[in-house]
Length: 190
Image (tube, rainbow, N blue to C red; front, top):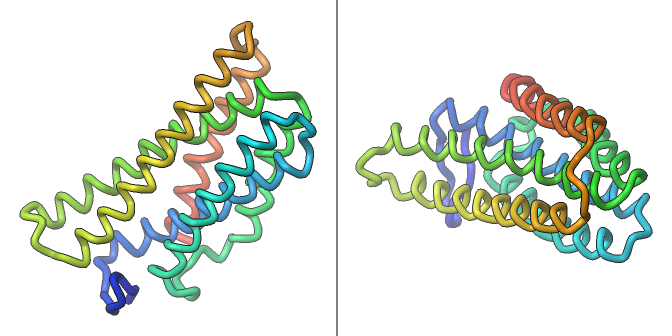
């Protein structure tokens, strides 16, 4: 698989092809999470939160698309987009607490996912001498930093919503985390 990094074509190691496919699918889903929130929520703070994070996720999706030719992307992108939209719209129907808890859950998973990819790159290039691979690592690291920031902001906003999450919200966030893990496993292959 070839992908441009810094204006050059690069053949990525096989493990990275699958990882980049999951990244693209995940970022496409994340774009739709925020679009789902914006389609449903009328809360001014939720809408501001969603617009800011939508812009970041769109940037990530665009950058990953430059690294992964269309033939190498997940063939299930329509499914990931629908799932993302529902993951944003459903909690937006419930209210800000559900929105922020959902984002915190998703971003906790995404942080771990990008950390695993960074560790895999480090194992592949322990001396950090493969310049294109290290440029890719820097891109993925910046994405991870953004996702950590999104998680922390969501956690702070959630704590400002008052009472702790009830059983239904805890069940929902567990479902979101499980769905995220499953989506990565599937998009890793398809």
